[in-house]
Length: 133
Figure 1 (cartoon, rainbow, N blue to C red):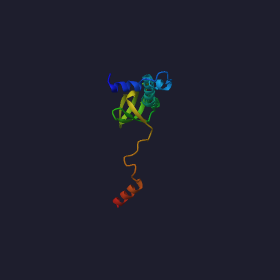
Figure 2 (cartoon, rainbow, N blue to C red):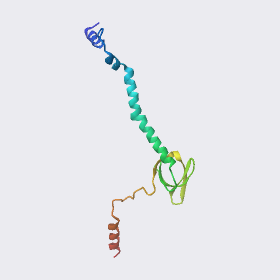
Figure 3 (cartoon, helix red, strand yellow):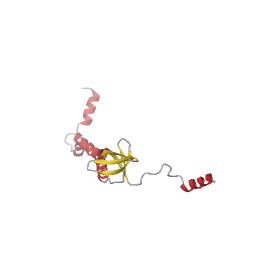
């Protein structure tokens, strides 16, 4: 046995007759595995379950007139709600049937903001009056 190996074994081996209860407890690898499992649960699985519950509540609360976003990025207005499907108006006089599981987001009525939400409508009207004169 070489000298470095003997030094490592001497450092790792508990002292004879000594009570190293806490060191033995913390040296157990099962404790660290258990701590990692608990951390993974609280950091990964639990937030995912909460998001899934919120999404299910949104899907269950869909009503006529809501604006929804589909998984493909399509946005439409709900015109009919059934058990497993939703009638969605994607353009004027164009309705499609969509499975509820394909809905990724439910927006309330009138929630989408106009494209130029920061523009002042008063200034635009004043400019239009000047152009007519």
